[in-house]
Image (cartoon, rainbow, N blue to C red; front, side, top):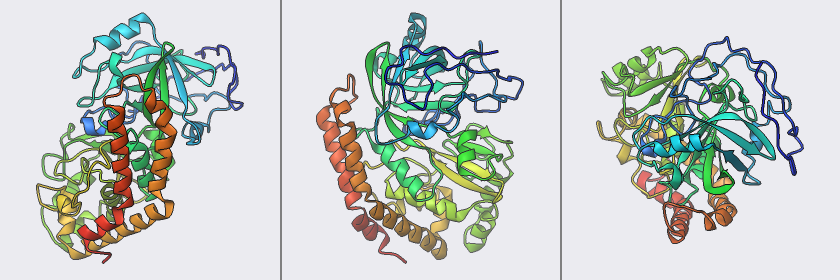
Length: 445
């Protein structure tokens, strides 16, 4: 029998959440899988292998709960959308013991980050213990300087197992996002263009009663994500981490890191074998195992949000997952780590074109006129969607919503003046996206 910690004073609790929550029995006899609360994915611009989405690294095994059939807390099974309700910015209160703080403060940039016990209070209700750890490599900052964090709700036997139906959440400190809003806007563009992508929203964190800062909150690319985005979530998924479709890469577990389903790399190898050649026949052979239309959509969205740090805008790129969808029998791309979007414009066709310069998929595609035109048409379709939704106005709304929190940010990685300048630059780039696309692509085919 495992039990939830009770709520403290519940003044102002959400009416959809009971003020005292007691969790029922948890069957811990199931297999762990790879999700124990998160997905172990990469965190994008910082090049880490722990990602924007909350993975379990097994760094503190004591009391860890294997992921079996879990009884969800009443009233919370379908409430995860409430966390991503953009009409308000949610506030989370983290309570840490001196011992947990000591562990977090002792860790360095390249250490294996350990989970520590924490309590989480939201809407007047306290949950826990939950697992909490730092994340990041190049964007890493020490805990006392606003670190990116992961929460794992399924880590401890006496913990909640789920929080609003989710196994884990990631809180990005935005240490490489000078606008403090790249991810929220970019991920929306991906989703609106029909690309399976995580939900993103801003959130405020407090630690032991003190304001810790404004964060981007992301859900996880894990089995729950696959259930939301695919009819059949039982397929294989890998994080592409500085790998490409060449011999030696697709079989390397460090370059294509297995995360979900069976680690059957035959589709990856088949695409690599096909792309040893060029021309329409090679693309058709690759297309037996890769959904080219879905890839074009992912690639087009990345170009429109200027996510040039990600695959396929460089050979052996990263910042993406690859899922083998059993329903289609083909590979589908999923973005992550989009914090370096919207920084600068570029010739996003040619940057993805050269063999061993751009990604192998895009480079081979651009050698064939029909494939290039299919991609370019999807770029223009995506541009029309962005204009119809007025993504520039949406970015202005996000800027205005987060502004009060930006003004009191206790330890930002950049000045208030820099933040405002990068926000204005980002909005200007979005407003001028059509002129830029026309310039680089020469109009719709």
